[in-house]
Picture (spheres, rainbow, N blue to C red):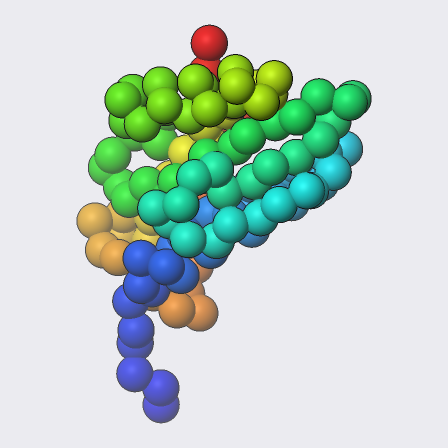
Length: 122
């Protein structure tokens, strides 16, 4: 039997990126650039309706609130977007163990997603 393994920070980030990426695709965004490194921002550079969009993705562990973000970092992202005549967004994805939310998310085990869509930085 395989040993139970906790997902790494990078794996959690990739999972969050996949969740957000699928939603963006469904909503008609065209991907111009994708950056899967957690500390390199933005993670997605997209085009929709001739408007450029910069999207910062974060995986958020329970019990943290996926709707709360680092306002200093997001202010920098908003300034960066303004320079490029783009819109800036934050996408926080809450991820938790489906059996016990206080436990980590494990490889090949059920998990809960708490994602409320893009938050426009205004």
